[in-house]
Length: 233
Image: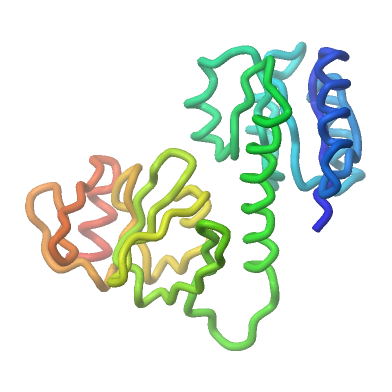
């Protein structure tokens, strides 16, 4: 699998370093380099990109502002000298955060994360026959085929999510935001910023908690009305 990369950074030395690192990895192809987000927007209108190495502090639009303008987002790795943006990066589904100056080893770690996610997406985008009743989950270099009926709930753990099943927990790179768009809304419901549940597995409501088996999960204040209307009416 060849991953088409775009570097967006206003510093020439930073672009050159990434060009060098990308050239050392046979799975990566440097599709283009842009010195600011406006140039990147024009480039992406004409080219397909799988992975963006994105600086944050740039003239005009910041990397964060640029990312928010994209309706269809490639996989993104932030490359920046400002560690305070890490939390915001995770909220935007950024796969990793490279703090300048970073080593080639750290670069490879980030690329491996991106590669795993892109591989999983390629499997999920393959056409299927009949009604889909499962999700493909990549974990520890394996791809698991988890049936919807076997998922009790899903927990967000920053850039990872944990699928809780009768056979235990499976940890994978993803976000609840992405899963909300992927999983059928008649079977799964977001109840908290950190939890999504299988509707049919919810057994009891107790105050601001729901019971699934022996586990008690919190209901977020902004989700309570939807939870009550969809599960307990």
